[in-house]
Amino acid sequence: MPLPRVSIIGAGLAGVEAAHVLAARGLCVDLFEMRPAVTTPAHRTDLFAELVCSNSFKGTDPLTAHGILKAEMEMLGSMVLSVAHATRVPAGKALAVDRSAFAASVTSRIMALQTVTLHRGEVTAIDPDRLTIVATGPLTSNALARHIASITGSNRLFFYDAIAPIIEASSIDMDHAFTGSRWSPADPDYLNCPLNREEYERFTAQLLAADRLRAREFEDARFFEACLPIEVLASRGIDALRYGPMRPVGLIDPKTGRRPYAVVQLRRENLRGDACTPVGFQTRLTYPEQKRVFSLIPALRDARYLRYGSIHRNTYLDAPRVLEKDLRLKGSGSTYVAGQLTGVEGYMESAATGIVAGLSVLARIRGERFVPPGPETAIGALIHHITDPSIEPFQPMNTNFGIMPIPDAPKKERAAMRSRNARDAFEQWAGSVAGGLALPVRMRNGENGGMRSDR
Ligand SMILES: Cc1cc2nc3c(=O)[nH]c(=O)nc-3n(C[C@H](O)[C@H](O)[C@H](O)COP(=O)(O)OP(=O)(O)OC[C@H]3O[C@@H](n4cnc5c(N)ncnc54)[C@H](O)[C@@H]3O)c2cc1C
Image (cartoon, rainbow, N blue to C red; front, side, top):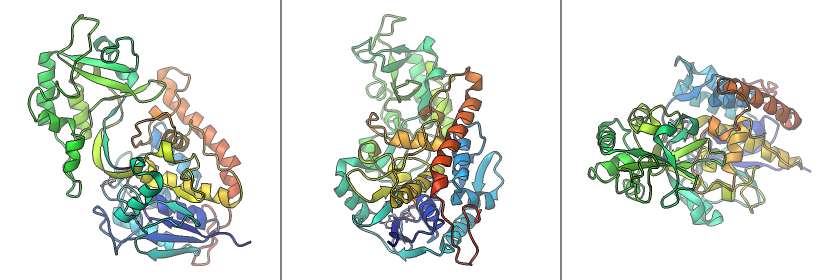
């Protein structure tokens, strides 16, 4: 029986990785890309994998979550990573690229794959009878977004991201914090960081003076009315925060026996309680300014950030409710999702889910069940996080140690142990799953591509 053709919608970071995984193993891929006929508000070229903002893929240190993610992608033969190394520009410890050379090289490598057929034009609906990977990204075209919402339910597709920072719980100074939710002091789910009047006024003044990122012209200002950045709220008057996200109502500080002047409430981000988020602290402050200004909250003086806050246009699914662990859309036989649309956040994270979706479709074609790598690994942690039904409400997530299990080791040794555990678990998984899925690649120039030949 002939092997089925696979449709991939979107030739961004995720789409090209998925196309590479499949075509490199001899499968026929129809790759649909709407640019240049229809474009997004952020893309400028018709090239594949165009980087719409920063040219950095972040660090490579194997003792960091980003370094571990890259090591895993490399083991899977990531094309994006390989091109990134080939087009690298000096940027200290970060892997940064010449963005034009990067996108041009990705485009030519994909076009060199014999079994990829490119279709330029907007896709407005998914054919349920074809194996399809939807990788249309944070700026998915309106028509297709409407169609996806009609499949998942409109309350399962979001269009904006208003992200508050995530803080490592162990870095919070408990001498300046207390647990309890409003009116329920015994509730352990919230941590409260009180401020006296002087501290509150200093915090508000610095918040207003801090450097912030400007909204892009396509990022609709109406959004901010629905979910205001904390610094915009603060500009509405000295008491605006005290009557908004920093209101102390229903909270008594056990150290003073009184209601504080203002409070920052932190909500647990995960069941383990080792990461938490200041409620209502979505922000457009630059990252260094978030660290500086939030350190004026006494309990957060030495806070370590697993992720900084941000607000931007982003189309993404309520993945824990609509995606299976193999990245298939629940209830659909043959539609898979990859990239930022799955609720991961970041270039490399998007590319990694493209590889996973490609391998998942490959397993499906071979009649096998696809099991993602375990949560000790960077890729597995992302997949488990975005498909964890206990996470509600769901917000996009980047790679970080907060979503990986804490190793049983003294604090100083944890990074090294996490890195080792991740490598061992990933190698075991890759050996049992990915190795068996490799088929020879055919390049247009007649070379035998092999799994690693175009690296
Ligand atoms: C403005 C902005 C800035 C960002 N900056 C950064 C950053 O600095 N660093 C970082 O790590 N991450 C950043 N991100 C987040 C994210 O990592 C990138 O958007 C990343 O490119 C996502 O990869 P992707 O493959 O999911 O989507 P994309 O790379 O956007 O690829 C999706 C592709 O699908 C195409 N497409 C869309 N709709 C259709 C359709 N209906 N039919 C056919 N084709 C379609 C698009 O033209 C595009 O080529 C940013 C996101 C946005 C929106």
